Image (cartoon, rainbow over all chains, first blue to last red; front, side, top):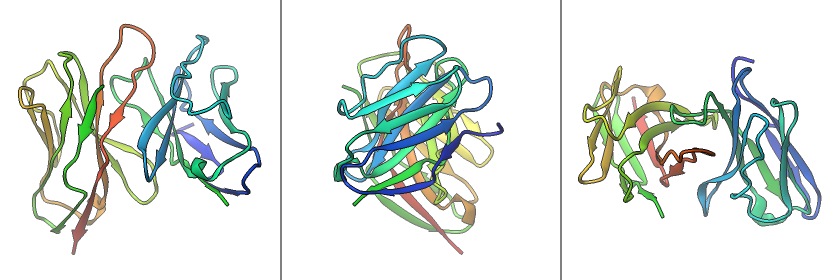
Length: 114
Length: 117
């Protein structure tokens, strides 16, 4: 597609429920990143996918968070047993190479856990 | 650990004025990249400008330019002839490129810029 597409745009969920956030990167971009933007912590790296290589999961805050990227394209970030502190904007970005020319971000998913 | 500091939480100027946003960073590395991203209410982070640390020449993109002072670890963004559409959060970001693996961005806390008519 022309840009990075994320869905849903907004998600309200009850504490304890599981949620799935979707990212559709720019066609041909091999690298995909997830970042979290929250009031208290600012923007934080979560996970990185590059082609068929094993993902860099070093930024995932707990084992309730997981992500996958199917066929080197669409990625899904899953949060299990959501907590109120998971409320944030989840931003996806894709890029050629690994990112030193800057990423192209999507518009994010605003997750609210009530 | 690398850190990025934006000391101005909010700024406000009149349309057509020039405004400068400050950013300092801390690293012991010599090879890195610096970025300014803009985040309007649509939430999409938009790349404004990029600077390579080994280039002494300051980057420019139309009305946007930077003042990169490597020794002082300073990377300010100047917006000339500001427009209403420049109203947004501006984030300074820093990247150290490892030999392999993720090229992660470290972001500052942001400056909320308002352009008044």
